[in-house]
Image 1 (cartoon, rainbow, N blue to C red):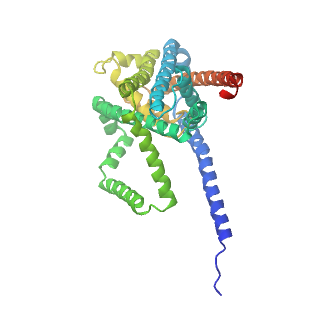
Image 2: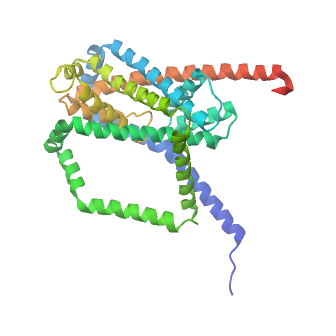
Image 3: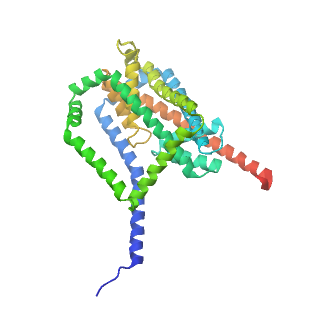
Length: 365
């Protein structure tokens, strides 16, 4: 006897499977960053002399320079908010005040301390609800915002490889990890495997358009393109470029002014051939920026290790490099928490004010 499949049970199974996958994704989004941060921090604590690090942080740090860094951090986020406002107006979102634009970034970075990308989602929802525009429209500009940052990071990486090729070559030749990196890059089978993966990915996109996963990828790529395309069609492109330079100049200065806070990094400023510390500052800055691609809570773990690695290229001891990364990361985190608290107060105040204004203006509002 032929049995016909029960469509209801099949649909229910597919429904449960879909929910299971979504729940798994949510759990991984929370657990993975925490595991990365905790794992790297534990490894770091095992690797360094914690008492020596604490001694350097307590007695060998000029905190006035770290305070300057915190103020530059706030300025960079304000500039980023103003820059994002240009993109938002390019897709039809009404102009917001500078304070509101800044708060959208303050709150986002504060929430990223809790969970990576949570801040990106929040700032899109915040602007969407505040200005009563479609969330998808705002989300597209957020993607374009991050894509433009990726372009800058890649350019800075290329510049760092050019101006700091000697210490990087020394590391690659001296340490086992460096030699493994070189061997990995020289392995032709590795490049063949990468080419094969790219080819399979493109073939799936080309011939598997009816698959649900391919449709999702197509939709995501289309959103990326739409968000990025507005950069070339919006008004104020010149100002956008100027503000981008301002953002990344602030980011670099956050690293560079902290060089003045410790004697071992201040010595790099006076070392011949470092362009008054600008070259090692660039390397530390670029390595730290690239580490933010690793999922973690506010960069804790990956950022610290990347900065330590970059400083060790210039002869800074492991304990000193760890002290630098711990002090700078902690002060930045304190600043982000303070800005997050300010954002929460501002949003509650303006929401109450706007609600009162709407009730007072009657049915015409």
